[in-house]
Figure 1 (tube, rainbow, N blue to C red):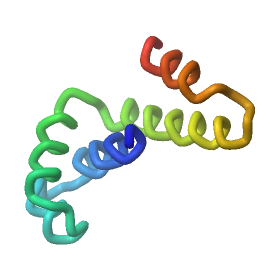
Figure 2 (figure 1 turned 120 degrees about the horizontal axis):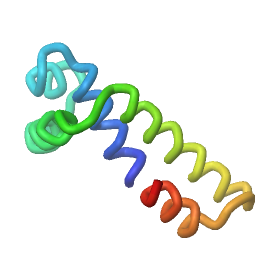
Figure 3 (figure 1 turned 180 degrees about the horizontal axis):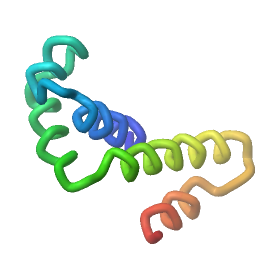
Length: 79
């Protein structure tokens, strides 16, 4: 769920038309689009890209048994 939210924030940051583009082109619900646009203002595109990549890597490494998911997410949040 964290990766999905990070993806929504990244899409909101990249959307040129704001929430109307998210609702129209990406078929995102108006509530989710408005929330994503509002929260994305506090992040840069590079930060969101890095966060999304790190969350996906953490998830896949946990599924492979390389890391413990709880510990890895805690480390990610604390950095």
